[in-house]
Image (tube, rainbow, N blue to C red; front, top):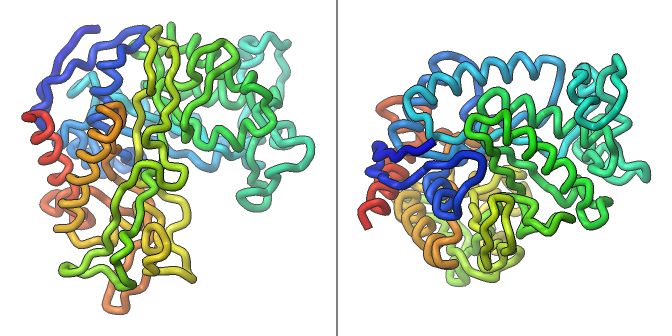
Length: 406
């Protein structure tokens, strides 16, 4: 498939790929990435709003479009509805990549889901009429059992049941039109996986399926990692992804963000476990070799805010997780900071890194006269189109138009 698109952000980059992806095309996609929960709901008005947002900004990579943290028997029906929405937006822009997540979670509710015959066949096993087994996915030594709460654990990638589960989910998403899969905390799931043999096996099974079944015969695989080399000698993932890991400047003192005094954050290479300068190079599954694999950094969400450290400058993000910090800043500073961060990340590793722009994401947001902080959704939309928007949409659009002109 060969195509070039100008898009609403003045973008004339090449997004052509089929069966494999060039380094140039990969970098082009990452440079137009937004972390956006496209399928927060399936209400027609919400889907239409998200379609408008994607086309308006010129986004080409929609990260975390589907974030099914808990799984149950209704998932297959929901994914079928996702497929209809993806078909619709792909008629307007066939180049846009949507990403689904297969996280580091397993719940007792997986036992509502029947294992299709094609999963057994893929693993060379005789068909059994049964559902997935929660217990069969767990670490035998009890590690990470109930890690996310009662009946909610981290699955063990060395267990065949876990491997079958990841393959099953990946095929469902690929068949629905998703062309990227995020694997979450790969080190938790693979903590007993010597040399990442099982991860290599499952990722390569997913790649093999995508080579025939995906829209463009390729699926972009990634996880929160600095990089892993599989047992086949190739990089396990097609690009790397990691939280930003910002820093509060030493000159700052504790305060609540206002228009005149935002809670400042700067980026520094080498800070903490940040990805800058550390993305593992090697040979990719597309055949090219790099000293540093292209990567995304994101405003991550994980805890909302720390009740005992809210607005404390000694906490890296003023007591918030990353997206919550951003959501609580005044609009003018959000505009300046996104421009700064986008260009800083682009420059720090010679163009190998890209900032994944903030879209719809769960966040801890201060509101009302009391300034109470509650967990809700941060929405990027222009307020002209949605009352719940944050006016971040136009900021993203302007940064990308400027970048295309440079």
